[in-house]
Amino acid sequence: MGVFSTRAAPAPRTPRSCPLPADRLRLQRGAEHLHRLGARPVAEFLSESARARDDFASMLCRLDAWRELSPELVHAVGGDLFPPELQAVPDDLNDNPKTGRPR
Image (cartoon, rainbow, N blue to C red):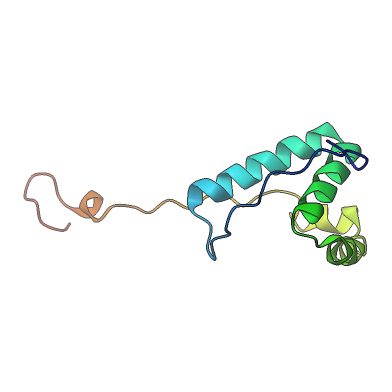
C-alpha cells in the first residue's frame, strides 16, 4: 500500500475503551515487528492509519511532539521496551494442600 497507493484501506474496527490483554500483546508484537522493518514501513503504517480515520493533520502534530524525545533518553529510562505482563496468582495457591486451609 504506501503513501502513493490508490487502494482503499480497510474500514477501521470500532475501538474499545480498554483493550483486552490479547489485544495489547498483539499491538506490542506488531509494533516490535514494524520497528524491525525500518523507518519506511513505519511511515507507511502511520500514513495508512491516518488516512483510514481522515486524521492525517492530527497524526502529523502527534508525530512532531514525539520527535521532541531523544532516543537516548527514552532508552535510558527503559521507555523503549514494553513492561512485562503481570499475572494474577490464584487464591488456591495459598492454601495448604493437606488441610485445604490457608497456610
